[in-house]
Image 1: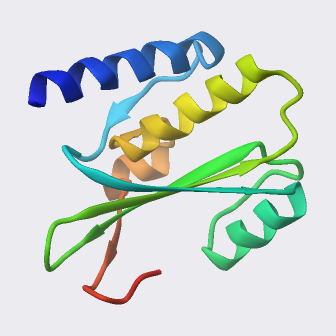
Image 2: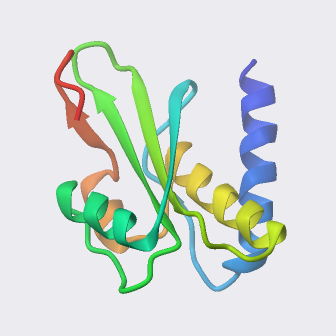
Amino acid sequence: MRGLVARCCGLWLALSALAYAGELWTQVAVVENVALHIHWGSVAELNAAATKLGKTSSTEPMGFAVLRKDVATGAFTCDIYIAQSPDRIDRLQTLLGHELSHCLGFSHDLRARRTGGVERTESGSGR
């Protein structure tokens, strides 16, 4: 199973690298299993979600991901927020691959590298 996860992760990173070739990815968490939730919305809804979650967002975000680890159980959950506006399916696939890389424990954000890149939650607290 670990081999399959590693191969899938490598594939996602390779797909993400096509559009983000200038970024340096760093593994900030070892994620073997993750519950994934994808939220589709308008740019305004993404900005509202980012504000609610304490994230900084650009004026027109395409998407972002929030990886969480429950401190009691060690279980990972990840929420991907994506704007419904990509005009081409290849851009949507690239964006999904990029955000999925974050859900698999990888980061290109220097702040996330210093802090471990994973939010900690208590069991049952949700968000």
